Amino acid sequence: MIEYLVEENRVLRAQIGRHRLRFTDDQRCRLAAKAKKLGRKVLEQVATIVTPETLLAWHRKLIAKKYYGSAFRTPGRPLTSSAISNLIVRMAEENRGWGYRRIQGALSNLGHNVARTTIANVLKRHGIEPAPERNRKTTWKEFLRRHWTQIIAADFFTVEVWTCRGLTRVVVLFFIDLSTRGVEIGGIASSANGLWMAQMHAISPIPLMASSTANAF
Image (cartoon, one colour):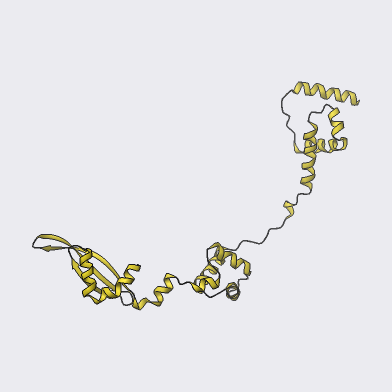
């Protein structure tokens, strides 16, 4: 019987030739289970429709699938919501001296239980340094708020006026007090060259106050 089945397999393989057979998962499992019992040496002596290497590879996948536990894994720690992340960033930016523990306590008071490492990761992801480094630096917003009453901004605007030579464009230098929004005209000229700016700087007290801050902007 065995000799007949072997010879029948040879005839079938000769008819199939190089055509690739398609197997279902159930067929692969059945063949792999029987092939493992026979072993590689016996399989090499039998004219099978699948090579011994393929049969044993199917068996290894069958065993690996049995012990693959991804389908039974529970979800890991959920990602921090964008609302909580934004709140953490806002607390760190508005309170530069607050460390991770202080932010954690503030979030707890609002009903949010967030771990210290989560807060650290959120701030690191947004490029925000820890409290000691943040506290040593001054932002532009803080600088402006502290010196708001001493800052004067300077700029130019142009206006078309009628003169004896016809319609002429003149340049107006003005200053604005940021705290009161008061505007002062520094000077008017047909062209704002370096000589005229030096004269404005020499004769007007407002440019003397504004020159350094205006350049900063």
